[in-house]
Amino acid sequence: MAYQALYRVWRSQRFDDVVGQKAITQTLKNAITQKKTSHAYLFTGPRGTGKTSAAKIFAKAINCPNSQEGEPCNECEMCQSITAGSQEDVIEIDAASNNGVEEIRFIRDRANYAPTKAAYKVYIIDEVHMLSTGAFNALLKTLEEPKEHVIFILATTEPHKIPLTIISRTQRFDFKRINAQDIVDHLKHILQEIDIAFEEQALYIIARAAEGGMRDALSILDQAISYSDGTITTEHAMQVTGSLTFEMMDQYVGACVNQEVQRALTDLEQILSEGKEARRFLEDLLLYCRDLLMYQQAPQLLSEKSGHLTEAFKALAGQVSPEAIYQMIQILSETQNEVRFTNNATIYLEVATVKLATPSTNQGVSQASGQPAGQLMPEASGQSAHSGQTANAGELHQLQAQVAALQKEVQSLKQNGTANGAEPAAAKPKAKPVKTTFRVPTERVFQVLAEATKQDLLNLKNVWDDVLMAMSVTQRAMLKSSEPVAAGPNSLVIAFEYEIVCQKAMGDEELSLMLSNTISRMIPNYAPTAVYITRESWPAIRQSYVQQNKHQEKPSESFSESEEEMTAPLPSEEEVAVEKAKEFFGEELLTIIDD
Figure 1 (tube, rainbow, N blue to C red):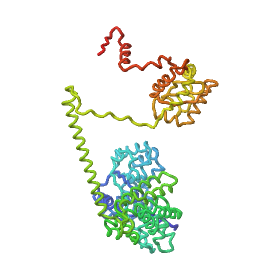
Figure 2: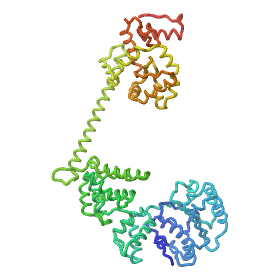
Figure 3: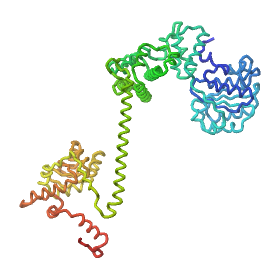
């Protein structure tokens, strides 16, 4: 007979053989014994935890004529035919490849007929979440009106994809991940039965790599048996699972704890060059940090389950603080999430290594005199924590006092202040103007004004919208809140609404070049150089220029306004308000009182 994989040969045939699911198997056994079985069951849980095996055992137990205490005998013709998959009344369906409406309708029609040999027809639908919406609707009708002789067992690893209408009509059993110790015990039993020597620590490595799945553990064990030369050693398990040796872990974590960044990066390069997989490497690191914490808090529990407590490991456990371990675990967890979505995991691993080996990470480690590098100083950490709490308490009291004083001041102003027409008790000082780094290029503006003409400005304003549309999106957005205020044959002045945009424009040579080229396309033989100012500074610059040049015989036409408008003082707020009122209500309805 051809070789069969271990997970097929050692598939559970009795409820008692199902590892790590005692509560579920006992419930099913009691239901069979007491004849209180349901018409539909839903088995959920991670892969390789025994869902399909439990379903087949249930089908055998409920149909076995020699059933004892809810367990099948596995010797009668019915049990053997179900085990072999030849029993026509126990139908196992893969919903991944039979997920259409027609397949489920066919099952529903067949369910109307009584079983031929067995007491119950049992339909085991694996990966039921793969069914289409129409298939679920077809199945729902059968679950609503079940036949007495039909039992459905639905198995899935993703119960959230199953409609609630289906879940509510089934008895749900959640299979959990199998404990590492239970996996080790089962692997040990199998190896003893097939007479293969092994090192117990190798089984712990396999159990950790299986991540709670018995089928994965048996597959890895199969590989380890093929890789070994008769005895499964720790080294064989390390190679098969892609895990790190304990010495490599001690060396890498020790370099991180002692803040030796260069040595930690060198160790990482060596680890990756040996073909270690990034995801497995991060999982091993997380487990190593977890073991450090466990050894600090409950060393007897860890020593009972692991044989890798090297001297370097024990030294690190006494050297690093729990706080530093917490931070290391957080960094590794974040890196593990980042590595899942990248094709270049080395970069994230190198960044994580630098984070782990920097002083901020190992803040619970002290280099005190007489102590080993990185040894925790409980007294110091306790004092720092106490001082931190004291500082926080002091700040809190100070803030509370300030709030109380402000509330008292507001209450006093309400009672004795503006309500009685009194002056405030103390006038608040005016806020100082905010200093800025922007300097108005006054001299350059004066040079433009010296040769500026009204006609050049009018020509430029006529094409200004077209100029903006010809610019790029970024440049257009920058110039949107600006306008030309003066223009001459060789240069122009642009005023910006916001100072920060003006500063950015002054430093953008590409903008100035693009603006000059665009204007030359709109106005032939005209390519002025732009000078940028803020709109707020423009009136003062204009007034200053007029004052300096008022004695000239023929002042230049620098602006669109006339000289009288430029030299005239700006209207006051009261005058502006009066003019607006005249516009709204009419001059004949207004009475202006000068008080």
